[in-house]
Amino acid sequence: MPQLLIVFISALLALLITRYLAIKIGLVDKPNVRKLHQGEIPLVGGISVWFALTVFCLSQSEPFPWQAWYLLCSGLLLIVGVLDDRFDLPVFPRVLVQLVVAALMMVAGLKLSSFGAILPGMVLMHGIVSYGITILAVWGAINAFNMVDGINGLLGLLSCVTFGALALLFYLGARLDVALWCLAIVVAMVPYLLSNLGVLGGPRTRVFMGDAGSTVIGFTVIWFLIIATQGGQAVAYPVTALWIIAIPLMDMTRLFFSRMLNGTSPFKPDREHLHHVLQRYGLSTTLTLGAITAASLVLALVGIGLDVYGVHESVSFALFMVLFAAYFWFTGRSKKASEKAQRHSQEKQV
Image (cartoon, rainbow, N blue to C red; front, side, top):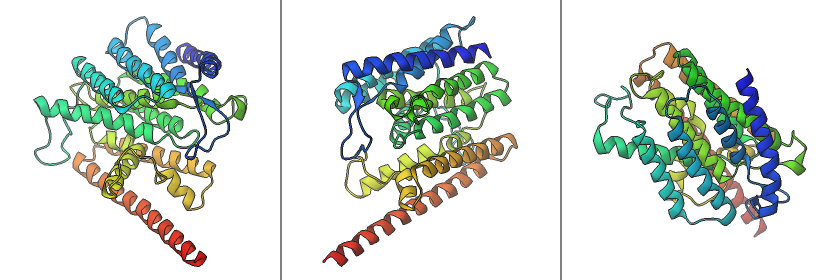
């Protein structure tokens, strides 16, 4: 399809140009105690994706619904994200911009007004409750996709799974224009993935997504999830959104609770993400990437299958909560085993 080819070429050119400029201006990720990569890696993946999507939107003969609002919101997030990647901004301006874009999204008419029939009496939300939940959802999606960016390829592949699943939902719901938009995001991600994984030019030409990219991706995810699950033109149950972003959502939620229970900041970095857990079980980085991506794809397809076959929302929600409990048990078991092994090693040294 010519439109998607334009997206790919735009993303590739933007990646090559911004990579060169990023090195000149210091928009790079430097290795440290937590970041074990070699050399300074340009943080331009998000810029290339956003630029390609902008080209895609502006090249349409008829504007997409909410197109101007989306480009405004995502553009604000991108600018602040780039500044954060370059100058390491404090928390306040980043949170403020996230609140602003959440408010702009609601002005555009997109907000969470229903959880569906997952529990008795929890169908509709009104007024301040709806606004508050929408702001929380925007903040949660942004942080979920930001926190999952821990190994090469993971954020890009999980994003492709999410937007691919959304494209399928919109296609099944006869929303072909929005389905095409979601496919365009997947295509825009390809040049970044090829570079991030070292396929495009090898390790020396590798780029990272940066907080600018993960922020824009997380916001874009919640934008399309709201379109897909809310209002009269919804194409899926609200609970289906949980399945589509299952891995980032579960990983973020578990880490937030775990860190707070341990008396630390929920934003404090550690080595308890799912990819760390799998690596402690002996999986290589490549196998870890494949396992998480495959799990995310399977869960997204399960959620879509439950939706398509009309399984009641309460049943789908109950199944997801069982999955959530299993995830908590699995990751918690790994942590306990790791702490036990560490104590054993210290005792042997004594």
